[in-house]
Image (tube, rainbow, N blue to C red):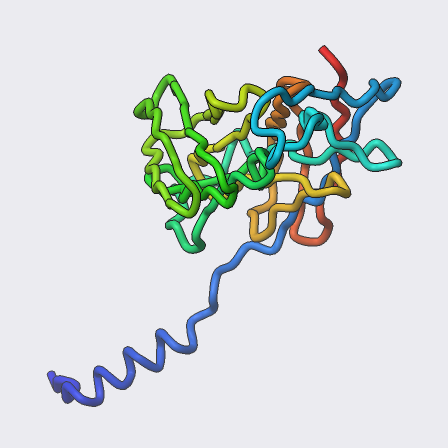
Length: 232
C-alpha cells in the first residue's frame, strides 16, 4: 500500500479545510421597546449640594421616552441563548463617567469577568458605591480625573450610587452571554447571527421592572417584535 508523501498529504488537508463550507447562522431578531399608557410627568430632583457644578435641579433620568413613546435604556437579552453560547470576551473598553453630577452613560453592559472603568470629570469629589448580591461590594471615593476600574465576575444587574449626591444612579448589567442589548433613543434593539428557532426575550428597565416576550425566526425572515412596558 502506497503512503501519501507528507507534503502532498498536508496540501490536500489544507485544500480540504479551505474549501469546506463555512457554517454560519443567518437569522436575526429586530425589535423595539415602547411605553404603554399615558406618559407620566418627568420627575425633577432638587439639588442642595455642590450647586456650582451640579446646578439647582436635575431630571430624574429614570424614564426617557421619544415623542413616539419609544423607551431608552431598556436592557434586552435572550433567556434561551443558542446552545454553546459562552460569555463574550471583553473587546471594547466599558466606561461610566460622572459628569455634571450624573452617571454617563446611565446604563452599561459588561461581560461576566469584565471591567468597568469609572471616571470622574467633575471638579469635585464623588464616590461609587454598590452592594450587589453576586459580585463583590465596593465603596470608593473618587476625586476628579481619577479612574477606578471595577471587575464584575457574575451575571446580575448592579445599581451604582454616589453617596455624596443622592440623586445619582447608574446601572451595570453583567452579561452571561453575547446576546444583550441596550435600547437607544429610538427604543430599538437587534440580535444577529442566530440559528432559526423560537426565542424568549427578557426586558428590564430600572423604573418599569421586567417583562418578557417571544419571537420565532428563520433564515429567510427576521423575527420582528414590539415589546410594551407599563408603569408598575
